[in-house]
Image (cartoon, rainbow, N blue to C red; front, side):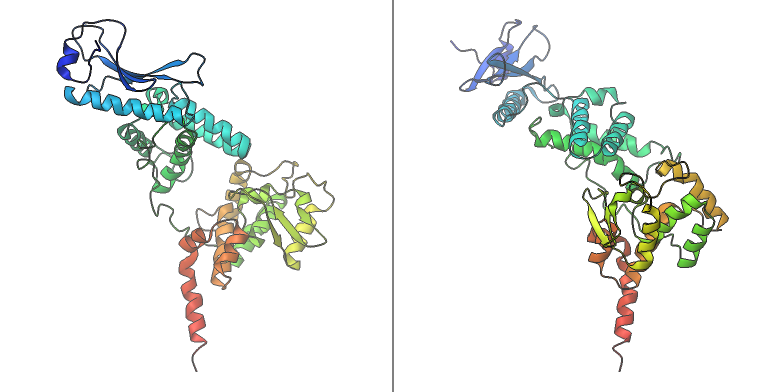
Length: 390
């Protein structure tokens, strides 16, 4: 005679034992109830036949469901078991995957498909903001709850920043978005790869805050940019001039190799930037002269704009020299290497260049240009309308 576990009264009558009591859901698939003592809630688990396992029988602990009324637990256990069966049917992993394992998989994925820099950045963020929470790191993805993710997000929001002008202060919306990006991507990759059957726990809780990236208001006019360059040491001056001539990210300019410059066609190749793909830019003569000079006499794999010691520029290397040059040039507080890019894009948009071309030159999206610089088009439109007057 089959043992029933689908009602509260039937479960209460079961004698305690180590082995679970099983209820057949479909061929080869069972939901089970383990009652180890006459007191306590008991635990639920699932069992299935699975060809991918070394042994045909595979098991998964589902939990106690102690926060639910007794009469609901069987139905919820069945639902959880079915989600696991569906997961296995889609080729999902038999073993449970934790948050920590999902983060490690994502770093490995970045190393294989993106860049070492991207992988290192994600790994550093996980170490600082995710894996340091031992309880969260050990949580199985299938057991993550929206409340857990919300608590993590709230704690991260209140955690002081470690660098920059806001060092020691709570995170802004834009900073919080950047810190959440890698974690959300790691969990999404696990979901896409079938390691968990639902993204319900983080789908809304890790959603980026809208309109978090405010417009960069600090603008340097052409005279200020020229003075910035004049007050910098020779190696930094060459680097800043490159930023003044093209709307590149400082990191993209620093990564340029001499071999990226085609002297015959006056075409510059920009290696994989933030957008993740190469692009080529045809340069006018005045701009081309600067890149001619920077690449002359160098091997194709040598850095185009190198420091005086021959090493490549990076944000740690240019940070203080840039500050000193900005101070010597009496520029507004907060002027950085990135301010050059913002100022150049501002001029391009204000001078009437179409947003698609600006986006292509800058290595970003039209949406980003529209969001941050679209307000400048009103002046261009006003000028065009003024020329219609007869």
